[in-house]
Amino acid sequence: MTAAYLHIPFCDHICFYCDFNKVFLEGQPVDEYVDMVIQEMAIMKERHPNEKVETFYIGGGTPTTLTASQMEKLLIGIQTYFPMEKGSEFTVEANPESISFDKFKVLKEYGVNRISMGVQSFNDAILKKIGRIHTSDQVYECVKMAQKAGFDNMSIDLIFRLPTQTLADFSETLDRALELDLPHYSVYSLILENKTIFYNLMRQGKLPLPSEDEEADMYALVMERMAKAGREHYEISNYAKPGYQSQHNLAYWRNENYFGFGAGAHGYIEGKRYSNNGPIQHYLEPLRKKESPILYQKELTPLNVIEEELMLGLRTMKGVNRSHFQQKFNEPVEKYYADEIESLIKRELLMVEDDFLRLTQKGKYLGNEVFQKFLFN
Ligand code: SF4
Image (tube, rainbow, N blue to C red; front, side, top):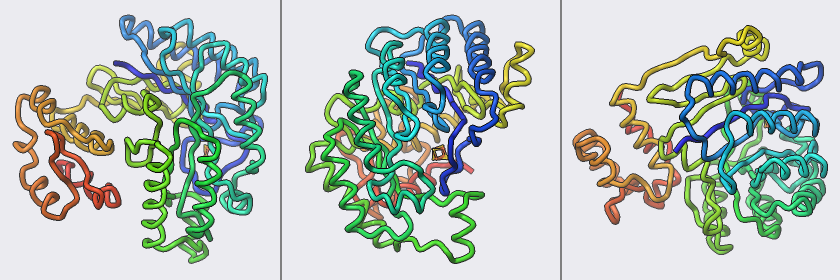
């Protein structure tokens, strides 16, 4: 299976916690960017004529900062170079403040069948504190518009451990989110990334974050509420109704091939990881000469592939299938990680169940600690 990710790096505001590759929209060469990203797809198609894309994901940045006609042009470009079979999962990220019914209609017309909405919280005061410019009312309008345009497969992103957030606040946000009765929810804990406004505030002692215990209580609450609402916990931060797991993300976690198009995008094709130039002008420059914008490319060693198999597979609640591992690498997983597995099982962070190596309930809270153990130095 091959997936494709396409990055739109423009945002009409900058959130205080965000370290994604993005720029402020005003004054950016958006039309040229759309043309050049189509050019990039043309180059990749020529290099990999037999690669068939089975899931597509347009993310950002904020894809919905594109106008309806820019979006239409982009979607026609995708259809031209990487057409997918009818019904294949095609997701676009939408932000409540920049979407419109016309844009939803264009998305629908060109085969988009899944919307992932950046909501983060239903508390307007908290939204302001994290630099978002939408309100919870706009989220409701956005969901209604999407449904009117014919979308039923929708997901929303939420974040917990936000400044001044209490367990009661977060519980309220979960209630509002579940009332919408969407098939999919992604719920993340805030990560303080270098070079963000929040990181600087934290260093100055000016970021009143919930404690680690409160963060753990919030995660426990998400798992409990989602289970009660019939959303299966299928990856550390993702919950879905049966049949609505994100096929695109599952492709990442299964370590499958994927194209990455756009400024700063990453890809993994034919055993090589690659990444594109990040700054917009550096990305556009080679494409103006019909050259590839790839900045960095690395062939993975067999050990790299094995560590990624474990690190990615353990993110899913199903875990890593031991027989599948043995088939793929001709050796049992214990050949590479006997000591790590034994010690993680002793610490009750990992378990073997139905031939799968998977996180225990305790392990879900300490996922990063577990994943790191599988890195070869
Ligand atoms: S979180 Fe999303 S909307 Fe906010 S700055 Fe980052 S990419 Fe833009």
